[in-house]
Length: 248
Image (cartoon, rainbow, N blue to C red; front, side):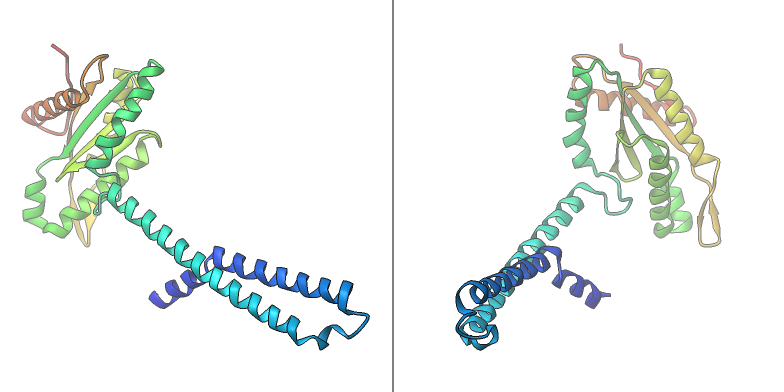
């Protein structure tokens, strides 16, 4: 697998393009020199200096290709590192840092267009018990499948991230309260209605949700605190339910 990856990297598109462009230019120069200047005296293949020039051109093209290849590989590595910095290693969704960086940008855009937004926080109920009963590998599976099920329900432009531990956070843009509550209901049912399987074990999972509307003039951190308070109210009222924060 590693050798195949190395081979693919060694023939990246920029290097191939640089090589063939250089070869083509050398061939054009060779043909023009023979056709317009040297043909009346000797045949085209009787000019070693042209072959030396062609070889030199091929050498230069290889150097250019190698340099471009190194830059291309460096750029790919940089992109991969940036993606890793934005993503949660376990679930593949955005991490907390990326959410906190991007959510204010989304909120500013929504405010300019007078769109209603909700912060939704939820965590997996009794997750410590799941870890203790089935093992940490099973717990990791629960988190990964939870993220996958949520992603299959939310819209592409909803911002969804792992907030920490078994807790997740979402920014739903351009939704009213009823729509946000309906979205949460679909997510909640997708988790509790279908069991999670780890090997031959079936694991029942549920989650509790807290919602808070982003009100005009409200600080982003404050809205997150509201959603967190609503989440803990849902957990204290029996779990596997959602609560919408009512601003006082």
